[in-house]
Structures are given as C-alpha cells and as structure tokens.
Image (cartoon, rainbow, N blue to C red):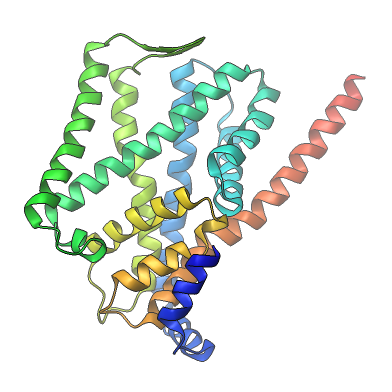
Amino acid sequence: MAVSAWLLYREVRGLSLEDVGDSLAAISPMHWTLSVLGALVAYAALAGYDALALRYLGRRVGRLFITLTSFTTYALSHNLGASVLSGSLIRYRAYSSKGLTGLEIGQLIAFCSFTFALGTVILTGIVLILDPTIAIRFFDHTSPQLARGVGAFLLLLVIAYVYGSWRQLKPFKIGPLKIEYPNLRIVMLQLIIGPLELLGAAAIIYFALPHIGNPGYLTILGLFLLSFSAALISSAPGGLGVLELLFVNSLPEVPASDVLAALIVFRLLYLLIPFAASLVIVLLFERNLLKAQRNAA
C-alpha cells in the first residue's frame, strides 16, 4: 500500500481535491444510476457463486440466507484484504450454523474461488482476442499476435474444463478432499455467472468516466480485469492505491482527475456502501444466533 500510494502520488501530485470534486460533480444522474445498476448486477452474480456451490455439494440453504452470506462475505473480504482468508472465516461462521461440515465449506470456498477465476480467464481471453492492443497499456512492446495467442490459450483452458465436465473425467484427490467435475448444467451456469460479476463491476467505472476520452467499455473491462486481479493479489485492503495507480497509468487519454473520480464512485458503490451494510448484517446475525443459543439452553 505504501509503495502504491507513493507511486500514485508521483502521478497525480499536480491535482487538487477541487479537480477531483469537479470531476465527480460532472457525472450525470443517468450515469450514476447506470453505475448503481452495475453494482447490483455484480453482487447478484456473487450470490450466484454460493448458490451454484451449494447445488454442486447437494446441500439446500434458503435463498435469502445465501444472498446475505455472499453479500457479507464479499463486502467484508474486498475491504479487509486477504480475501481468501477473511472470506473463508465469514463463510465458515455462516454456513456452519446451517449444518455444513468444515470439509463441505472448504469445497464451497474452492468452488466460488474457481468460478471467479473462470470468469476472469474467459473475459481476459475474449478481450485479448478482440482488442490485443490493451496488453500494450500494461506491457510495452507486446505484439498483437502474442496477445491474441495468450487470449486463445486462455479460452482453450476453458474449453478443456467444459470437456472434462462433459466426459466426467476422474476427480482430483488431495488427502481427504475429493474434487469432482460439476455436471454440465452447473458448468454452463458458471460460464454465465462468473463473467457477469466482472462485467457489472467494470460497468461501474465505465459509466462514471466522461464520454470525451473514454476508450470504450471493452478497454475499461480489460483494464479492470488486470487491475482488480493485481489489487486482490496485493492483499491491500480494498486494493487501496494499487487500483488507482494502474488505472491512472493505463488511461493517459483521460484526465487523471476524471479517472480518480470514477474510481471513487467504484469504491463507494462496490466497496464502502456494501461494507457498511455488511456490518449491520453481521451484528443482526450474531444477535439472532446468540438469542437462539440462549433459548436452546
């Protein structure tokens, strides 16, 4: 975070808070509405991650509980950083109250993480094939042929996964953990829900950017895929500094104040407001659980 913040400061030290404030004020109500819809689509798709994982495990849990658990998991883990660990603790606390074993919850977490990775691989492959010049924004001297080749390879990996599900190849075994290919129906839903969450999240930034200089949704999607992945790998809370640095450097055609304003909108709708709401949900859940334990005693 410190390194990213220092590098970001070097990029935007000529800006003032007034510049960013003017950029925020320039976002039209219609674009605010579209950004909100993008956030709603993203979190609805995230709930689908958990629902698919439970279907894969053959366990039944109420839809409202799944939705609230998924929302809380991602809202907290995205903000706290170390998302795999923090998200795992939240899911364990929630789903163990519904009778799932530790092994089942581990499988659920692995399934959800894989669905996210699958969506990232699919969209990255498509973006690199349709617009290979995006790679140059991050890696200088990358040829379009190489970018398209990487995109094609990523999509071949997805095809291999679908083939494994269709043919029901042998499961992977790691100690007591047995990972089987989901049935083809579940895989098809993964291919929809995984990308949908990322499409919705990238739309928040796209609609918050000004029309002039905006390179288009496909480019913003490609930048978001790499920037958000880097932010998650960094384990910095909310990817703070990492996301801003990569976006500002990768969008030289857009004024830095407009880029920062769009990322503030993203953080507000995708991170901060869900974070505040998730704290309320956790408190209510713990209160109800404590009350149930007292009644049982």
